[in-house]
Image (cartoon, rainbow, N blue to C red; front, top):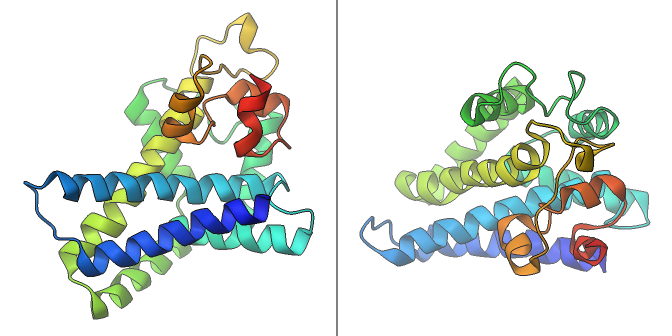
Length: 222
């Protein structure tokens, strides 16, 4: 089931991107234009959630299949290194919300400063080169404005969504007793809101309690 769900998200991301790059009009007065951006951003978030599940070995029991799906999903998300993500993510689970947590900003709880720090820590020179090459390849077939609005902007919105619902809200201070031992809070039980905001990832305390539960089963832990 995990492989099917992962491939569905990856395929939906690819097909929708292909459609909007080819057929959607960049029209800032059209509600449909913004809807396409939001849908693609949500699918970008799904790519990373898929890669995240692969890091926890919940996409497939076959390690090779699991890891390749994780590599594909994180690469499509933003040219990211799956192996580097695994190392950082396991550090996050080992030291959630403290100075050793690569996802946590101990110097400031300001949302934008933390988000920029988060982006800085996870962005590499290799990644920027890969994305620059991909951008210029896409320019061979598609209008540059379409690439910016339908490929670049949704990716940034996806990082914003992931950070806000998957890092900032769950782990920001103050760290209360009910957040222990993971320094992680959780959304109130509302499965529709949880799914729409970040693929149930807002049920974050539950994720830290049971990291081997795939995202599509997290709601069962509420």
